[in-house]
Length: 372
Image 1 (cartoon, rainbow, N blue to C red):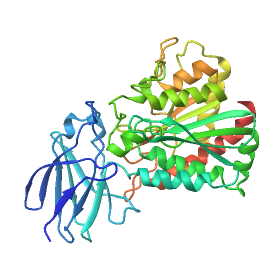
Image 2 (image 1 turned 60 degrees about the vertical axis):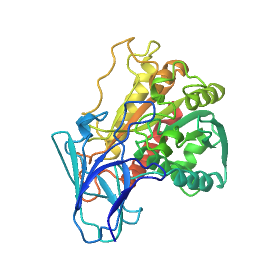
Image 3 (image 1 turned 90 degrees about the vertical axis):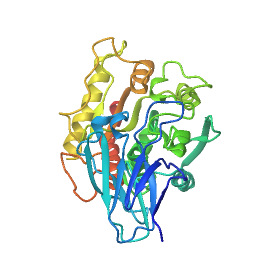
Image 4 (image 1 turned 180 degrees about the horizontal axis):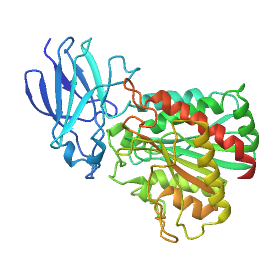
């Protein structure tokens, strides 16, 4: 059997530029109508017992080239367990070397979360007691924007993920959050459901997810720069979600993401919004510090610079929601690289750790839900 590479599947992204023996020269395709690219996901067949060298030639021109030093690609032969592969970056080229044990191996920027798994998640959670499903609307490609609601408390909590579709750890986080919140024997979940009504959008960008994009939707638009003025033509995902938020109100919101370059888990807040209040700031700080005390996977020393007073970018969801609803809002970032605070040579930052972080975030919210 000759070896080959393909990416003609859900979230697939790679272009084969050349081959010499067991070495392949590859390029990542750009997001449609956009210059963003960094997500890759492809299948290697017929290479059992052979050391294959995979060179991504255009890595240096990607959206975040600072994300490559220290990064290791993920590989799986069963599409369930994703391990770190031997990976090097030099002179703008990302090189992956791997010897699969079988004739099927999948490589990805991070463990994928396919649209089929998304549909399975939505169906499984929507069938559980106390959960209501609604479609907030449709994307440009005609996919549903799924929203799962549960709980009957007065506080309105919104959790949403994958505005940037290549940040698949965000939907793994959502899977962990949904599983905990719907566990009828979980005391944290019981208290949260009694105190709040949750509205959860596991995937804000189904089109980009299926197309294998890093950061944009079907129109090449970065959804997290559309919250000040979303439109049906450019960003229906934000338009429909924000319309529903206006109907329910928002007391607490978390936007779940992944960061290409920073090898830590961290939060970004809403400093700099025009309507910032001491109450909001104190509650945000309380959540951040409580989470840091709860799990060694989270820290507060590394993250993004904060905006100066009055200088927050209101096109971003966290800033827009905090300013619009006088709520506590935050962006959670997880690494594509390993977490330097607690590294794992075999798996790096992983789906399992993403799901457990969601559980810790919910336990943190439980401690303060009465004050939000």
